[in-house]
Image (cartoon, rainbow, N blue to C red; front, side):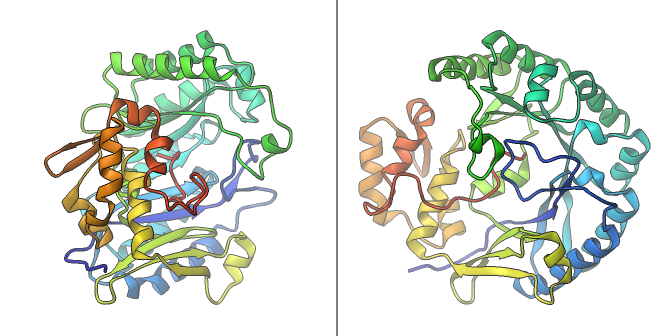
Length: 399
């Protein structure tokens, strides 16, 4: 039985779904901008959407905000000013709230980003992917390597001290030397955070339909390990499977996702997960996906369901064990309303296989468990469940 003695932290996700061009590997809800952006109509819809969700989160403060897409930096500073004025009027943002916005190098304008910083946006996540022009063309990116480097400098000049760079490896026909050159160039730009993850061919993408030639498994594994080692040598701590941060610069928003915290999502296709102490329920909700239908809707909700107690525990494990430090049992109980007693058999099996280690009230994956996380997670799957087909929290790569 689920019982909440204290609710988990609460985050806000805002989805702005337009981009200049849809990348062939992207499976996020993004749409090419084919006309002028309906900024005013969309911001109005976002704020109405948030107002409709407020009864679910009355009295709770928001610890982090993430503006994702699409390419949110396509929006004007005036539109974002109206958006944040409404958000601040409706919600209680914590004084030290982390506010992240995604941006692509091709959308950087010095004056625009100075305005974004003045709005209170204090963290940028820049979609670099690679500094190699050939690989950027293959990935369908609209920027070149030099633009990527310039974007970081523009962000710093605009007052952003907290910057993440997204970097992919295992690209079509990418050599180990090219992959490590990307990592080194990212390090040389001295961002506070680097997301370093492998290109995967996601369903319903152009790359899935027309698969490119990727490096062999062994080559990708070597690139992966050598990239991690290089990041570590330069002071970037690996605190999650694909996230590396300088000291005290972890992404608070995504740590909340990985620890099964609560989040309210507004915008086309955005997801929410909210815990209710009075009913001992955890509800997942998603919004209408297509932007035009979303803006014209009287009710923005596309669907919702409750997460069963046993499913909440499994989802917690699937995400929290991505963190190098794992989790404490009190955090598990706070965020799921459950105890781990009924999973003691699986925990013992993971300990015996050297995939999990326990230190008092703390559980974490061993180095072996971290490298073979699927094997560890499958120990907690119901026998009737196909391997790792369980739903997970939707945003893992965007940091």
